[in-house]
Length: 436
Ligand code: GLC
Image (cartoon, rainbow, N blue to C red):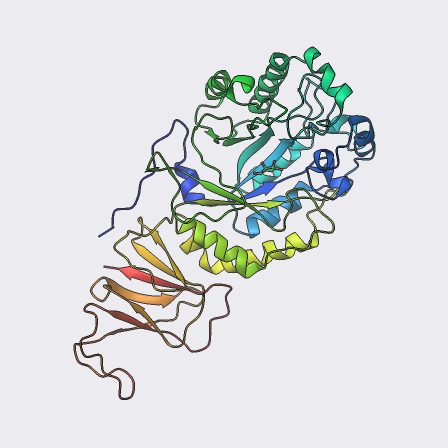
């Protein structure tokens, strides 16, 4: 018998595939890859557009081969990808007709999105477009707390000539291009609405004309998933650089959610950043996310030559090694029914379709894992890495356990798994429990 699981709030877009696939690749790529010190470099260092122009002039990703990117993502077990069509700097990776500030006019000389979409589709991955609402290049985009020119009085003085309505038209026009020129798009991922500050107004749904924009999107791509950063909640909540405690809720109700995380502390390529997460940690993050009913969107920042750098590739490979034997604990899985009490240092994930429960063991204990209330619920147990049986001990009352230790008065219905002393060779070993 399959157990009931949490069903998140229904939304206008199609999130069924999304909640089954669970794992995607985020790609942050733009001119900032050349600065190689964070995708916010223009804002952080308050660089004016004229100075920033050198990155446009020298943007020449001669080693760009999206086939290798798609393969690396596919081998890691990822099922979809989301790429920055335009980040806050305003530079566009595709051949937009609405600005000259695009890849086609750099030494790259072509639309970089088209071959990427084709390569990822070839590897059976769904397609998502990230699009920045912020734009530090556009002539009509006014200064706000994040703008590179926020301290430049002359620049700010000219804000009166800037027309945010014109910027909104540009935003809608670019959205239309992206959603009509590349076939079926599965996700559109906007980033983000700006809070007001002491000196500057914020920007939100009125500026972006979010309602109208959402209507346009749904007309062109009805089933598409839209995230939450247009300041109107749609299909997806997107916590970032943060592991939620529990299934994300809105107004007390569980919703579809996706955590986005980086390998290191930057989204764009950062040469000198050293806080790279280990494969073990990344695998645990993926499991932890799914155990709370969420997806993981894991980010790479390709270099200015157009490659995913070795540090990221090494981690993708490590995750792929784990996924090749353990993805059953990820795909089609969700938070386990609350009646299953998870033992310490472990996470449960549950597949309601197969009625199997996955015990993901974060810290390998000595010889026994005790599952309370489970003795009458589990039919068979095995390790996922090699399908080796895990012995199930169902103690009868007062039976001896170990030398001189009595189970007298022990917890009823306790199931004890007898595991090998040596931790299986896997980032996180998983025990597959076939439920009755
Ligand atoms: C933030 C940052 C940004 C990144 C995004 C990903 O909002 O502005 O650089 O693209 O998070 O979620």
